[in-house]
Length: 428
Image (cartoon, rainbow, N blue to C red; front, side, top):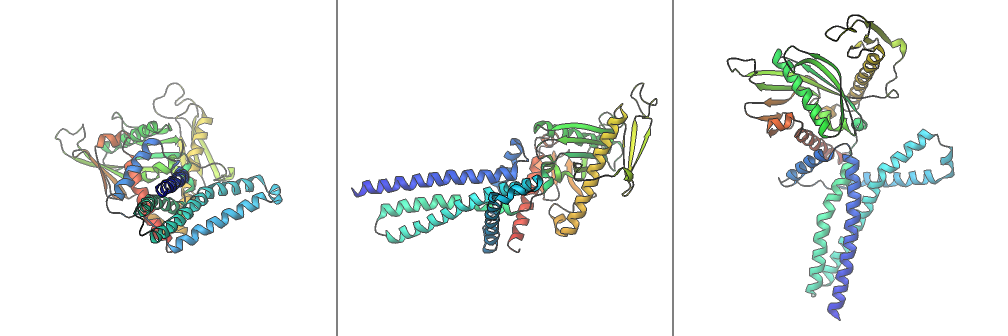
């Protein structure tokens, strides 16, 4: 009878634990999806691998301190206030835009509140198991069962705490946006132009692997096959900016150009700019602020080139930004493309100005963020790519240039970003 009761108690404990595990897994998955909706399956695999490497290399998981606990409880209270506000009859009088904002905030807080509830239950269970261990010192089987339950909970709780901490980090609202990609040849002459072309194709392949839409907007090709002095493209898809935002900066290449007869190693560079695309509601451009010039396109292109004023140059007078477009035969299409690029550049300027005014320290999270900084070196003779901001080296340069291993660097930068932001949470 005694053993039957113990087996029944064990079964009940295991059933409760399995249900708790399932709930914890569900809540954790919601948090993960909130953090990682921007990435495709291939990129997520690299991120999980990077996190596994960190966890096995002596890095301890972040823990919830008393100060962070206060912030979490504030989020729980805000969730309660929102529920009450939306349930009140006065909610029917709210403007649709305001109502949508409240619902969006509520949906963001819901996974956090669910995970907090599960964490509270797990903590209660840990306390109950401590009491069982104290009260059953002479019952070895009961001791063994309680210890097993404790071990399972001890494995679950740090993961749940880590996801709760990540939910506290400020999110970049631009992470889900499409981007405008700009690549420019730098120092190095023809070899720099060839490298700029290689970078453009690297991002095109990465876009294809992730199911994103890649469209060339403008390209100034060189006589050397595959090279370009300047190129811009749009990349559209889920969370493109969040995945590629760390690519902005100077990319340096070390290799022997195929045009080099003596086999001498050359060093050249190209710059990359990743600009989040802006909607019309984000950047309001008044017609009085724009000067639109039309002219005849130049270069090879058939009967429409040099015969019609299809090329468009738009100048934003207040800032002096100029965008020229001549790829399309239609003047209207060129103007639409030029406005899209101009809006992205203005939005990027506005975001950078706000970031600098809000926090000078934010720029240190991924290097200075200055476009003149050399962020990465592609060493072809040694077959490696090194990102200097985090000291990560990826061997197998072909897989990087094919877009397959590009996520390794984004993952490392994102992890450092999160680690430094988590370190600041306890000081707030």
